[in-house]
Amino acid sequence: MSHELFIMTQELKIVPTADGSNTIFNSQVGENYHSKHGALQESRHVFLNSGLKYFIENNRAREVKVLEVGFGTGLNFLLSAEYCAEDGVKLHYTGIEAYPLSQDLVLQTGYDQFVPAPVWDSFIGHYANSLNATVNINQNCQMRIAHCQLLEFESNDKYDLIYFDAFASARQPEMWDEKAIRHTVGFLKPGGVFVTYAITGNLKRTMKSLGLKVEKAAGAPGKREMLRAIKRTDL
Ligand SMILES: C[S@@+](CC[C@H](N)C(=O)[O-])C[C@H]1O[C@@H](n2cnc3c(N)ncnc32)[C@H](O)[C@@H]1O
Image (tube, rainbow, N blue to C red; front, side, top):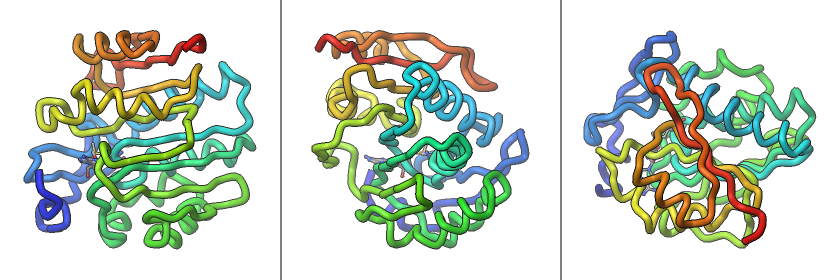
């Protein structure tokens, strides 16, 4: 897939999903950025409840480092930032994105209605500056969009949580192969949690071979199961 595909905004169209929240359809890839059964529902279920809340509750964490693969519209970031602000948890968020959306398209998502105004205003106000630079969203929350391909991403930081939100393996298999998953999991701390909306035999095998404990969790509407994997602490 070439970089140009994503930069051409005519390839990207705002479309509604079944819960009334919007997503983006990429006609070149032939896929939505979120589940057609509900963008908001999926983001809340997979990344917020099964990822962030699970990690905070199990670790009594007051500070969390999140790495997202496929930042896209920023919906997962927005819900996480809101939750952490309310819970008084410090959030350090890095989103890897090879093809950042224009600010205009992000504004058209209508996601301002799902988070309090201070979170949205700060996110939109800092969006352009957050490309390859850390910005303060509020006193509890920092974020950065790493503008690069997944395999080009490098960091000395290790993360508590990975939100893996790539396009489906049928559309972009290279994001789900052993090399990509090994690279991603290399940024996870021991005891850290990896969540994604899908589960396949290949993904489970790869995770186990990399020393993660695999859990099946109930999927978001439209998917029976999703994957949560936890990095062993003895590695
Ligand atoms: C399913 S969408 C992500 C949805 C996003 N989390 C959201 O809430 O809007 C997949 C994302 O992966 C990005 N992407 C595609 N190939 C990539 C690559 N090689 N490295 C990093 N990001 C990539 C796409 O541009 C797209 O934003």
